[in-house]
Image (cartoon, rainbow, N blue to C red; front, side, top):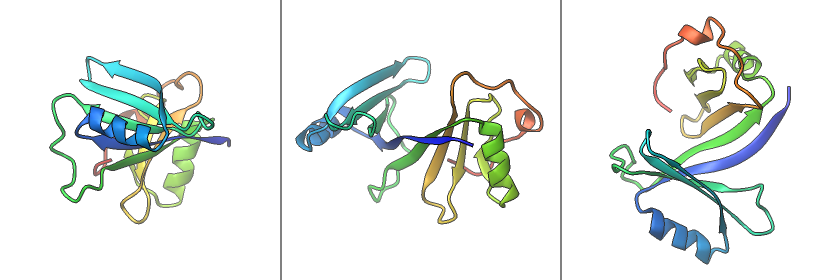
Length: 143
């Protein structure tokens, strides 16, 4: 099974100020996604010599009351996998709870044993066709 690191995501309250901070570090904007339906913006920033190692800044247009008060806004590590169903089954067989199952054949979230680090798995290429039992699985906990 193939796996590839994609990015690290952090949630931000002030996109402009956060981008200015990362520019001070030498990072540049490499990609931007505006999602009107979900009401959020994703900005990917990376060092000029390492565009394959971005940080994803996630800004929710309507605010984000879910952010912890201790300034720990880490969101998740993202990995592209060759078979999201096989990856999730491997994790479930090892006792890992799938917080957001890959109902859509495209994306899943899990938590590491320390209950802090979130993992996002994204299906390589096109989404796989929905499969049971995953297509009917409910979310567990939060991600």
